Length: 265
Image (cartoon, rainbow, N blue to C red; front, side, top):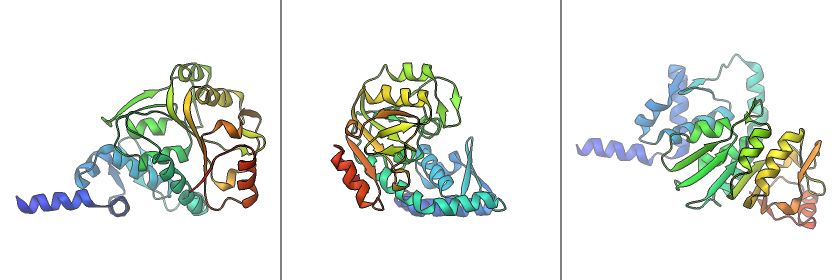
């Protein structure tokens, strides 16, 4: 019995990095893995395993399917090239997400949008009792079985952005009061503000921004200085703008000059 307990403790003490290395080995050996079996094998929650698999997918090791993941097809050169190109950006995203997760407190009501950087927050989020309201299918798939999280999934027409996005979505999200809201963006300019390619995307984000006590924009340096079709927020509308250390000094200055609170990660 003592030996069994020791093995159990070793499983519990495995760091996230070592656990994911073991998962990669399992993928290479078997071709695919399941959330349930990995959860039992490592003595962690299924939510933790889902976070690991999402991270491995972003790093280019796996592709997620219902109930588990499969080894990424290494014959797919396009996917390999994408993974290599995204390597540095992924590291920056992880740093930004880790810092964003540190703002979350017990009892918070959180909004999480469809951004992959926002999704990464779940990897680092403490095991607090919180409510999460989202229109992100990947967020829903990651947390829906976590007993600490009350999940509210917005309705609407599913879009390739990662979840529902229409005026039904906007109306639903406008009903809630949020402690904190986390947003990604493909287009942000410190002078112009945050913008979206479509009017409906801007409307959805604006609904949440107006109902949240704290709003955080998570954006790496590669997306800085871009402007899209519809503006939905000014720099001063965000409690914090989280970016990486590679952000150019000129952009740092412009954020501050336009009333922003810059948080480098």
